[in-house]
Amino acid sequence: MLSVRLMESLSSDRAQAGDTFSATLDQPLVVDGFVSAERGARLLGKVTSVEKAGRVKGVAQLTLELTELTTADRQKIPIHTDAFVREGPKSVGSDAAKVGVAAGIGAAIG
Image (cartoon, helix red, strand yellow):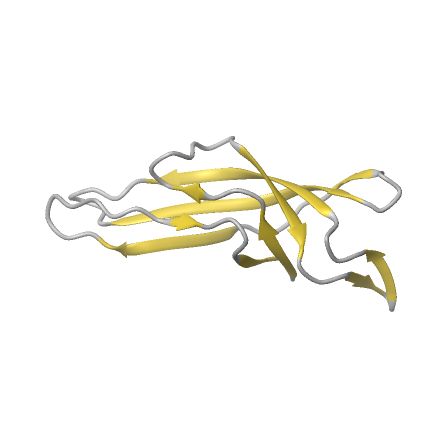
């Protein structure tokens, strides 16, 4: 499980599947007792799906995955994480709710 901070806000009313985003590691990445990437290391990710809330499906949903890690010596390493899914509040009637992930807010993606 990686703890990350987004560099920009994402919202189901503006994001589209395939959009990319930047994040940083919120804690060092330790593998087999060794620090593989320091806290603050840059990550790239993509929005894999966006569901807007509507009258039939009353819950907005945003799905994210991380795709690349930049190490301290500037190596870009492809990574693959499980999807991080964020759902918004249930929408009632014609008021379509939206879901967002704010910049600077930590998210656990693993």
